[in-house]
Length: 75
Image (cartoon, rainbow, N blue to C red):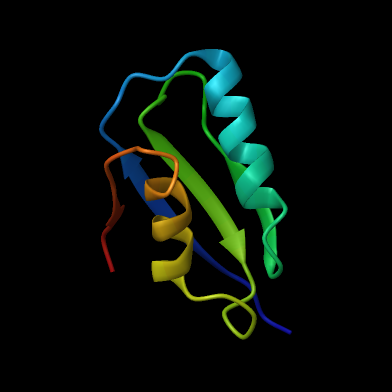
């Protein structure tokens, strides 16, 4: 099984608690290996995932479902 990764840009300024909650939510999605927001780049979330188990668009939608504006960076 090979893993891929995507970078998600989040428009809003998030407090630590909300970032940790969002990382936990994405980390619990089947097929996601990890979800991380770096301390110095609080608008970016790197998500490592199994492309056979989850699509990148599903991950972006998971962020948006929490009332946030988000988009995938690059491709």
